[in-house]
Each structure stands twice: as C-alpha cells, then as structure tokens.
Length: 235
Image (tube, rainbow, N blue to C red; front, side):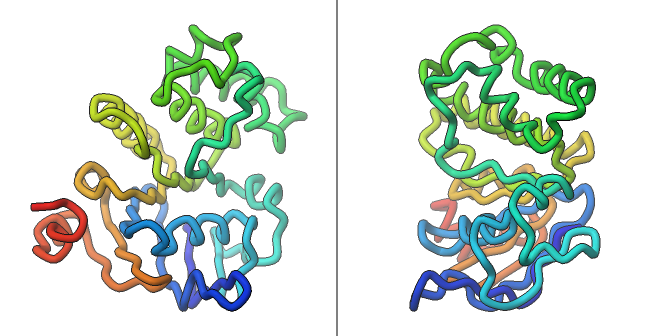
C-alpha cells in the first residue's frame, strides 16, 4: 500500500535518510524503531510531502507521492499525526478536529460521520468538545491529535511517537486505540521509542539507524532478538 524505494533526503549537507526501502501493506501495523535522530520523523515528513525527497520513490496504491502537495497526499489517504501533537491550544477540541477534515470540507455529512467515529474512539473528547485543547491533559491531547488525524480519513496513518511523555497507564490506553484503528482496517505506520509496547501490537518492524534501515522482521523475531532487546527494550 505505502512503499519507499531507495529514498534519500537531505537538510543542506546533512543526509537525514539514506536509501530507505520499506513498505506497509494493506491492513498492516508496521513499527519503526530507532533512537532520537535516527530518521523516523524524516520518513514521515517525506511521506507526507512536508520534506522533499532528494531521490527515490514513495508510492501509495501505485500513485507516486514525491512532488505532490501535502493536501493532495491527505486526499489520497496518507495522513500524518506528528510528534509533539502540534495542536492549536487556544482553539476548542471540536475546532481542532474540524481542521483535520479540511481537505474534505465540502462533505459535511461524511465529516459528521467521521466525527462521531472519533468520539466513539475517544469519549473524553466528546465530553470536552468545547474546551480549549491546551487545557487538556497530556494524554487527552495525544488522543485529540490522533482524532484530528482520523478526521482526514486515512487509509494509511503515520503515527510519530504517540507515547512520548505519557504515563504508563495512558500509554496502554493509547496503544489499545491504535490497535483498534488498525483492526478496523486502517494501515498504520508507527514510529516509537517504546519498543516493547509497539512490538506487542505490530505485525512487522524496521530498525533505522543513521537514516538507514538496518534490520527488519516480524514482531516475534525482533522481540526475541538479543541485540534489539538490549538496545530498545532493556532486557
């Protein structure tokens, strides 16, 4: 469904991605593991059109994404939920969610159905729909960020570090929702430093270091890999 083929990306003289090849097939939940600065966010920013690939191909359902505007990429069904949430803190929960549906703004009925689905996933957002986003707890803000991305009607959802800065109980809740989103039919590409929690819900995973994919495998093979456990799980 979403395929990177030999993708490189530069910031000036710094090479953030170096010949990245990976794929996430329809219905999969695929995890990207790596330390800070390894290139996980660069993969997502390049896929969503916010960064320009220096070379290589990014295809979604055989449609080339390189060179497309970010809004076009969302319309095709690839939606990015960024690290750090990037909410509008002074705006209400409802307005933040509505902005997520901007590319579909002419389809009011469809947006209302999607909003109902988001409120089903995150009942707390329905309760606080008129509250300023900045007044929510960290966990609730992360739920709002995911909900806003869902308003874009993703066929493939790019989730960048959704557990960052959250308490363990909230992390568990967030990962349960991510798994539900995937089981409902949305392909998920998940970048995470919380390797154990991410691998427990993944089908496959890639390990990225220095902008390169250095290892890939299914969930069980990576959970059982001593080097992966030492580097990312701590056991």
